[in-house]
Structures are given as structure tokens and as C-alpha cells.
Length: 310
Image 1 (tube, one colour):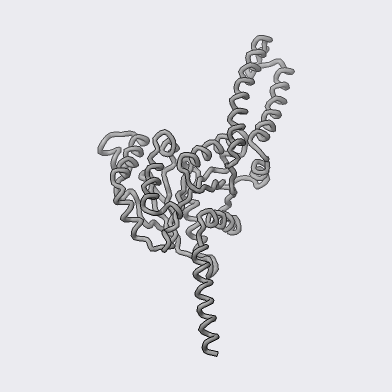
Image 2: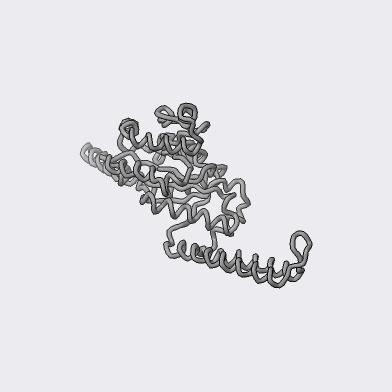
């Protein structure tokens, strides 16, 4: 007997998590007979407003940010944390919803985007731990969505990679990083970032460009307001730059030492791109392997019957 296969979709606010969920749901309806499936999508973001996908269940039926803000007078972030802590106190609601799905069904959980829920307020980690106790450990995986427009220059890409690594460590699940909104960015820019072998190499390229710009400014000997740059000011600028570089280089070394962060580009206007991401996610969560085995057994059974008839 299997368990419901679950994608836990996380990522920064506005990164395109709900769009990803809708794209996967729609794409799975158009697949061939062997891969076609009914993908259920559930909303676990109590601050969500609108989404295009068909909702299997919605945390806002339990509690919502708007209700908390109105009744308790909290701000948006405080209300969101209150809602998620309320979910922790009422996990039987989530268990009842998950129990409504049959074995081998496919479920995507669209989660909140506030990163603090996965780090210093480990709400999602506690939810995942409880789901493990319910028997979903071998059929869960995490999809971390990052906006491609956010990572098209080196500093932002390194920041996005660090966020992804933090989520991977916090949740301790099989993990896939998806670079969303690639249809809004030039393909060459995305490829140029993704083709770089390491974060350190990427930063060295960025630093070389910055150094050239700084040398140009020094040769001009002018500030932005047109005043002359003194020798002392030049030395102070260079000292600050070197200190920042050492910190950035240490972060890049951390990312390279783990060697676990890579991204799959997703263009929702390209069916091949969606299918590639889905195939990687299916392989990560091992979806279809048991189904294929049972399908082969049924084929053997039919073949044996035909031989008996002959």
C-alpha cells in the first residue's frame, strides 16, 4: 500500500509558487495515458488572496490572516505567524484533510512565503515532522521556488542560493530548486548564471566587473556630486570593499562546500520546460515507480491468461 505523494512548495513571497502549482496541475491533465494524473492542490497560506488552481482544501477555512488582523489587531506578519501556530495546535484538521486522499494520489501543498517560518520560527518544520509521524516520510519532497528576475545578477543569485540552502537544511526533505518566471527574462541571461560552475567563480566574475568600474571612478577622480575624491577617502572605500568581499567569499565557499544548490529553469509558456521540471520532481519523490511495477505485473497476468486460452 502506498501513500499520497506530496510536493511541499515553498519560496520567498511573490516568487511564483501559486503559478507553479497551477502550471503543474494543468500540465498533468494534458499528459499521455501512462503519465496523466489528477493533481490536487491545497492552500496552506492563510494570507493568500487569489489563485488559479482548483483548491482541494484551504487553510483559510480553518483560519485566515484577515480574520486575525480584524479580531486581534495584529499586523500582517504577526497575524501570519499566529495563523501558522494555530495550525500547529489544530493539526488534526490537516490530518483529516490528508486522509481524504487515496493511496498513490498526487498532492501539492502551496505554502506561505515568509522565510522566517522555515528558519528561526520553525513552524513548517514541525508540520513536516508531524506528517512524517502520519506515514508520509517516504512520499514527501520539497520544491523551493525562486524568481528568475531576482537572480539575474550575481549578488542576488548568491542570496537566493543561500535562502534555498537554509530551507533545505531546515526541512530535511528531498529537495528541488525551481527558477520561476524564466519567460520574463532573456534566456541567455538565465543560462549565463546557471552555467557558472560555482558561487565563488560567479562572484569572481562579478568582482572583476566591479573592480573595473571602481578603477574608472578613481581615474576620473570624481564623486557622484562632482567633488574630488581625496586619497584618504579612496583608501577608506577600498578597505570597506575588501571587508565586504571577504564576507561574500566566505558565503560563496559555504555554498560550494555543500554543493547541493542547483536550479531548474521553468518557463510556464513552454510545455517542454514544465515537463522537464515535473520529471525531475517525480524522480525525486519516486512517483510512478510502484505504479509501473504493478502495471508490469498486470501485463504479465494478462499474457499468462492469453497463453492459457491458446
